[in-house]
Image (cartoon, rainbow, N blue to C red; front, side):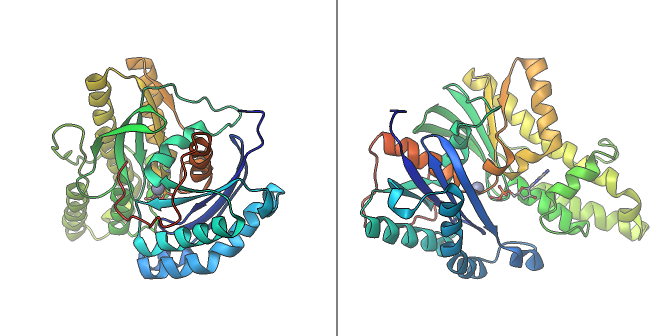
Length: 340
Ligand code: KG4
Ligand code: ZN
């Protein structure tokens, strides 16, 4: 298998990042991403603006991915694209582009599930990063997702827990908005949290049965807390920002770790791989390290550029499916609510 020389182009356009990547066998040659700044002004992704920006970005992004990889279109063996889940208008841009490119080059088309891709990003060949062994638990945490998945093999996965409302990244971003921070607020809350007292303020954790999550109550609790305190002292947020951030972070990490503990108990699996933008968080990384000591976990955090929305993860799934001759028909359509 490895004696073959397989080049696959991966294309990702499910949300607000237009991305393309070339993988050679299991190794990433290029990973290009055009993030859409426009949404910052709105404090969240505006679907109509996102699909328009994808249309503008897709050709230059793909060209750059090929150029940086040092190959031409003619050398590609297949085109992999994100079929879903995501915003329909955004998905359609990547889907139709990938279809016409594969058709024009007369090479196979490979559909990729974005949520599987976040998990399979752990299988990119990258020096200094171990690949998890099956079975393992994958927790995908970002602005759009909060999910715990039992991964039995590459393409046999069971979702065992997910959010019933907001994603964990949204909890960060919406709390940040209440505190007057920029969007996305996760990185700044994380930075300030490291300088604050995590026990300064208490927020109650939501009570959700089993392995599911809920974050919308926390956001409301923080909103009312800040309103109440600023009524008493208009400078409350300014004077206590680091402590507030530390307390929010402490609560959120506590919620995630409690569910992971439960998942390891229920499945008997102690290998945990995390992905998604929130996996950059210093609190979750520390908590996972502590889990290795305390509970005998083995934890995996991928290289940062492969964990936020990116096309390298689409390309690795494309490669794995290529090896299994698992190709898409040319009449395949995007699917906004695609399940794992
Ligand atoms: O994976 P990603 O880039 O895009 C998707 O949402 O799919 O994740 C972005 C999310 C945002 O909500 C952002 O606030 C959060 O990840 N984030 C963080 C950190 N870095 C990014 N949240 C907490 N701590 C961080 N260090
Ligand atoms: Zn994602």
